[in-house]
Length: 238
Ligand code: IPE
Ligand code: IPE
Ligand code: MG
Image (cartoon, rainbow, N blue to C red):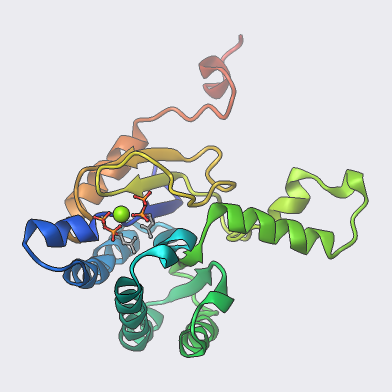
């Protein structure tokens, strides 16, 4: 039985270049990218993967041209209107991570509604990172921990970790980044300490089940040592 990741994180990159290749404007790429999200969800449902975390919009993406930000917000709102009920019907639990107060009230209300509606589901944890940054997450967790007035010795990795996004789920086993760039772009900095990275030049709107299968099969062949020696991992005497 090949080893399956329990939690896949995805940096869905390359929408703009996909549009440029077709002589289209960036918003066309974002629309195609939104459709491609379904491919990743279907894949995780089919493979019985427990958690899927999608990087949809970073803290830094607010600095894009206002028209592009506005297109992305409209698209996000539309996705919330059209996709949530079907995801709920299929047993998907939806959660959002990131700085919610950055979003318009209309979007925030729909996020809360989607989370409440799907809270009892357990087929797949679908985490959508919006206005998310790994550094924001760490600062946010520090503030929450400090609000408990801890003594210096109570500030431990475990204590802080409980306040990080996705603390109730296993850390990502596999990070997939499309679009060809080999960087983390302020995604789950804390949670990905021991995540396996897999990069593909495939642009996000071109993602297919086959590409995702390649990522998962590459992952299955890796040895995760978590700082140990290979012999230790295999339970052999040193
Ligand atoms: C990813 O595609 C989507 C978001 C960051 C919102 P990009 O828009 O970054 O596409 P490229 O990287 O410019 O091709
Ligand atoms: C990362 O993509 C963020 C998302 C996919 C939402 P970017 O396009 O923002 O990353 P950089 O700027 O190339 O590092
Ligand atoms: Mg990009």
